[in-house]
Length: 495
Image (cartoon, rainbow, N blue to C red):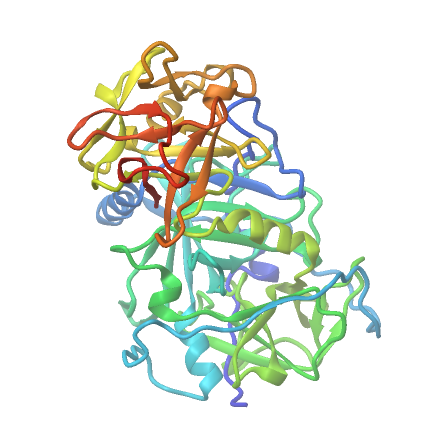
């Protein structure tokens, strides 16, 4: 395996530049809670892909992004003797690496097989959050992330300390994240060979306040870029959660801010002192051509024994312990956050924001941006606006509350949330204030339609009736499904 320089952004001493970023995880439009039952902390993006891109364009042009100079926890305890065995490992969960959809399209200078694939999937994460003391100005920082295999094809792994917290145990709801796979910079020229992706949600493992290196992990779920998933564009590293025994060698990788170039560092691993332990690399820091300094934090930690046959990520770069590089080891808690966050593309998932597109190509639309009880829900041509976005909240037993994103962003949340409902008297669909945890006419399940991959009938718990759209534009109705799978007018696709 070719040995390449590895630079980690936002690591160890540079944890001081870590960002604040996660918002409280809500179990539904009812009362929000700071974390999920799996111990993770989550936040959904408050802006659409277009709005986030406009944000970066505007502030880059204005020069109103200033590098963050504050300090955050620096994990550099005294070195300890290696441990022979891992603790806290569960049943291993694995997935293989994938190749980009367009395998003939190479954007990077080739190296070893593993190196070439990892250069494409590893990228720079740029994050920004408002400087509350100077209105109009935003702090900005950088970390490293890596695309890993997922059903949604949208998942990037990084470090928890790269995510901006709100000082209260949650993620800063105003923070914005951008991922650029294959990123590098020569002089004043930045290279983004595959373009940039915005985020739709973020989840972190463990606690901001009492977090340790061993669980210093976070995941970003990205929006598509012009309809393309990041995994289809650049491929992905495979993963293994719950590594019971260490490989003979590991590879740390990242894009440090000092060089703005991709670096890797090959080390002999040993277990650290955390309980359960983090993964350390023997032999001192990655220096010189393998420097992993600030900006490399969150970069992938991979199984070095299988690197060229297919990169497999087993953790992420966190910083250092003594003089040795340190990585968070992925265990059950990390897998729980990864699984909860990814929400397979086109499939219903908790905390997912999506459009609902009918077989006739129109989308479910909150009529005239109304926020009152009983506002009509129409089938209307797609405009990309928030009144056509719907926030899914899993209420158990396969049923979801479907909250309108526009009313949510207008401040109608919790007990005042407006959710998809229907009028018993005439069967018309409307937006209505949530009734407690959701009455049966406000709870919906998505039944996959056989022989129509990606299409669903949307059925109310009250009477198992189907959501239906007219042939043209007009108010949606709720009626008998007529057939087992529902009529064409009752077929819906999620984003």
